[in-house]
Image (cartoon, rainbow, N blue to C red; front, side, top):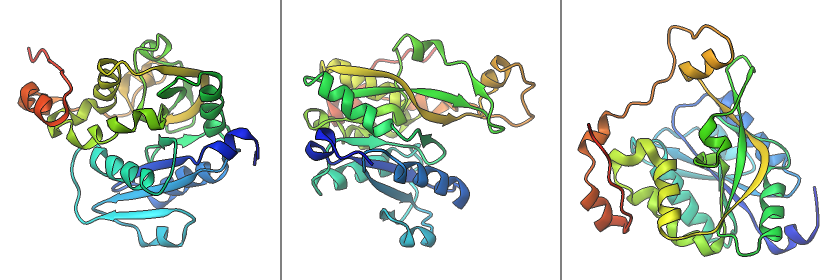
Length: 249
């Protein structure tokens, strides 16, 4: 592990919400945090389905008594606030079915040191099919129009935005990372990019199979956006002071 200026100045925490993932998947996620070249404390937050095995792992295990059904947003936000109030900075996120390259945290810290006015640092990702096949990146990622949740690193000047994971209102949760990026822009936060693919994103989207030249299996993941029909932009503004208007047509 590196013991340099970055490790001395920062005390990173990684927040992972989990719900019904297998122990094998959770272990892959956690072990990628343990392998970081700059040490980071891993928080795993049970969203209503705690795994007792995690109590023996080298991490902070937070347990919420019931599932919230918001794509991990509530456990993500609660875990982040717990880490902040234990003195951790920056706050990173890692979804349970994803994993980091060994230098993910190191690159996020190096980017902040190179761009001290950064509020948020964004990494890039590898798209990985279940069989391990790498898929060419999405154009919106390449064009820096989208930041996956697991590619976000929040420094203390952006901590005020972390409760937004819990207050973006439930219908909007399906678009959580896009909503968060919109909030960053509305608050005029400085986003810097590592330009390093240090996240491995496990994907089961149909269009990713096709892009890889594979026939999609019978069951692929499809984003269910029906909840957006109940989205109330005024309620969002009242809860979070973020303005998002959706075209529901």
